[in-house]
Image 1 (cartoon, one colour):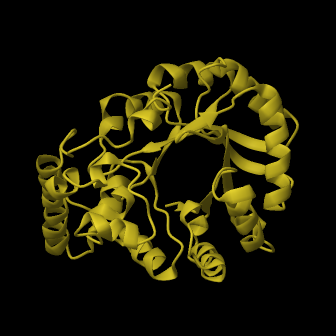
Image 2 (cartoon, rainbow, N blue to C red):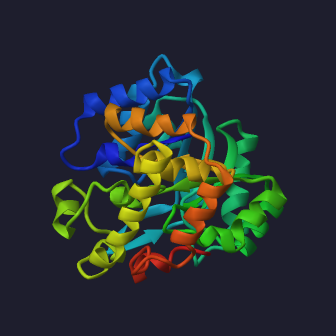
Length: 309
């Protein structure tokens, strides 16, 4: 199981608690630490992760990302030009306080730059010893194969959870064919599937913006029955809803990447490693949470334009 660090840069988060959470993650024997150059203002997240890893760098498989560069009228913007990638990696290395990145993701495919050019530039970084392995995020099977033809793609990161099962349509098979590890981000539906939110306003109160239409009023209420279904199955299994969602992903043969800035949530998440779901439970989940079950898209229209490359 990995640790997504983006939430450590949310407004109101406590940096020292975030550092302790990351250290406790390593102490538990886990190692995949995931950040990006666009998490937080002015590289805040990479700086924080770099501070937490001082003296522990060799214990971590350190992943960061390149390609998201800003916002324009609410839309995320991308830059996959080779010259940008070459400059960005060196800035990330400084912030992270390391001489190499274990897994360097192309955060999104730039529609103005052939993916072969972006991956080619990243392959140069591998040759220079600055990067160990290359990953991609939110791409289609076709784009993954194009990228893999330039340089082996070690990991593909995309959204995958009990209510976002689209990867099962083809990308998981493509990853298996190419030997690419699938890393599942937002594995708990931005916390919704844990039962933490019962009203739309609870999302904002927790310091999160409803960046998915599924958490907006109208869709939110329609999706509550999914939370209740997860809770019922978890109760029967003897785990928490969060642990059920993560254990289910582990059964799919992927690497869950839950994000948290708090040790209490970290320990709950790690508890999922102790559970194995039997065939009857998996079948029940399939019946209750099929592909397309959620009301609303998983991303806003502007953000969906930057996925599936």
